[in-house]
Length: 383
Image (tube, rainbow, N blue to C red):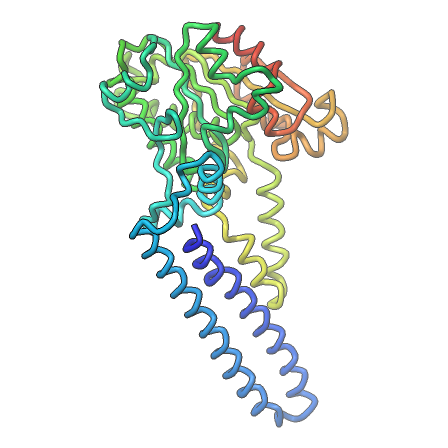
């Protein structure tokens, strides 16, 4: 992790400081040249030479530090982050911000989409699945978290709420919960393809024949699940009564930005505004240093992504005020996703989920990970 931080410091922070410094210097020397008739060019060349040497030295030091830290990790020096809940949360957050870059570099920190049990990946073999799910039923409820989260985020406030969604389903319904972990920095479409493949293999290796599948996604997780459904629906023969998608009876999305997230759109506007001046443009690089997964939240999925024809859709949205029509709710939604986006109802255009169940709660975006009203709704929808 420290190696990644060193690389990011070299590529983003140091580069930003260097470029802002140079832009300011260029403007200052431009004024000086005009005032002195160009006699200050010698001072400018000296300044540029010194600053280039200093920044080159700092960059070389950071790159050397990164190489040394990666070598120490390969030799097993120090503990691994993924051995603790907090460490796994840190890795997931880093993957959310730059997971696409980690995957491209072949980094060991890059998360691979997987079924999770007891803080570890479960191989998709009959033996491994039988060991992880000894009470496996024919009804499988698949849970996928949101941006920068892990499967352990479903435990949020479990002591206060009195349980979790997966725990409640396992105890009170025929469903066997299966929790996934994904690299949320990857493009949503790429994660959708990976999820479609994973579910194919999961169904093939599940300890008993699978009759029903329900998909439960928080935030970006809901988009990835819809993308996976679109992948199999678009395949040749995708409408035949084969494959995992024909077993999906319910799709539950919790605070999913079906119409896009205003925060990402705001960041994009900020980047464009910073780019208007050479002195501020490098600062926009920090904002731009975010994953394709985050960029994909700007507009949600493409409008032509179709729903599964035989699945029931259940949409849960949160707002900060009691009513989703309250001015605070209208402006901020749940702080990350506004109500119309969470329920797929644009102000102008067609309802994305006609006939879907809709639940509205008062709360923030992350309250949707474990909320008493959602417990009750899941009992009704999936029970």
